[in-house]
Picture 1: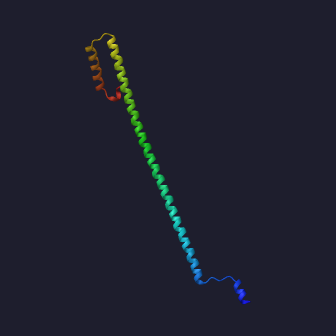
Picture 2 (picture 1 turned 135 degrees about the vertical axis):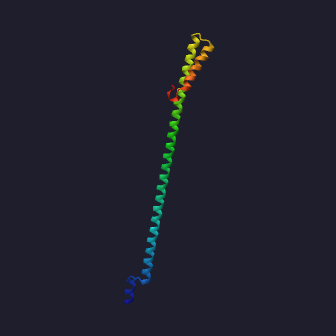
Picture 3 (picture 1 turned 90 degrees about the horizontal axis):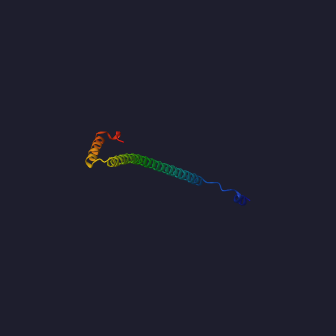
Length: 125
């Protein structure tokens, strides 16, 4: 019966088997640690990439705003110049309709133009 009883008893692990099992578990743990570090590094890389993309978007938005402001200033200057030319055209029309000679008209505009140049740009309409 000792033979049959030894067949049904579970084999007891030997010291070598236990050492191998512990080493296997240690290696599995080490592998998990490495995988966790890799995941952490990947997450950090993704976060850094997102931060970079956000900074690039902010920069583009700022550049767009600056261009928009420059365009608005240019548009105001163009409108002001158009208004001045419109006023000069209306003045020329009135002078011609009132019978002024070409010399008188030129003299009038020379006087107006010299006044425009002596006035700072911010005060010109």
